[in-house]
Amino acid sequence: MLKDTADSPRKTVDKAMQVLHAFTHERQEIGISELARELGMHKSVVSRLVGALRRWRILEQDPLSKRVRIGVGAFRLGSIFATRQNIVRVVTPYLGSLVERTGQSAHAVLLDGNRTLVVATVESPHALRVIMRVGEHRPLHSTAGGKLFLALSDPALLIEVERSPGFKRFTPTTITDPAKLRSHLARCRRDGVAWNNGESSPWSGAVAAPVLDDGGQIIAAISTVYPLNVVDAAERLALAEETVAIASLTSKMFCALWPAKPEKNAADH
Image (cartoon, rainbow, N blue to C red):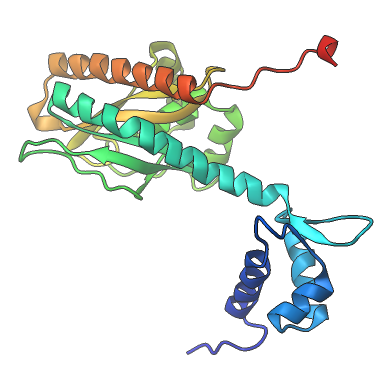
């Protein structure tokens, strides 16, 4: 069993968290010596921790006073959480409406690195249904929502996924050939929807539509998921129409609640 030595990774992380939690709304800047005294740590240890956090831009240091404060890196992480919470709050009622209209389960995903993250889900009332769990990570190339992110995001994302972790085969219908996948994603961009025809599990399918911000950038994907053996081709087209309609309503609501900030014109300065 590993022991928590003074220099163990867990001890180091714990100490870094103590440094970060010393900051409050009332005390936004703190000197290194002050931090060391308050936390009962040697000044050199605090200085080393602050240096590491500064490299990740979690903290920044005033060049004159040398006092440290929370940096833009922490804001970036916080904004990811805030955006996720906003999307969950907006999208969940719409998922419920989608399930009422289709009778099939629905969920919403966000991009999380090289995968999607299920952030909201509403299950079908039927006994035979597909279940998705909040917090579950899903691959990009073999899921309907994931394909939308590959199709509508910066092309660098597809290159990164192809490099690591690669296009793993989950079922016989999973698209693993890069050229075929690019052609498939071009259709997704053209049609505005993406399909999963048993590509992540052999018995379930899905259709997804994007939630877009004011600039037309994808911020989430809404998917209707269904057992492949109970939904025929005509029903799948109807599911796609309903999913697109709900995703469009969600996009409009999200943009109304959190509109993009207008860019300042040079003439305004």
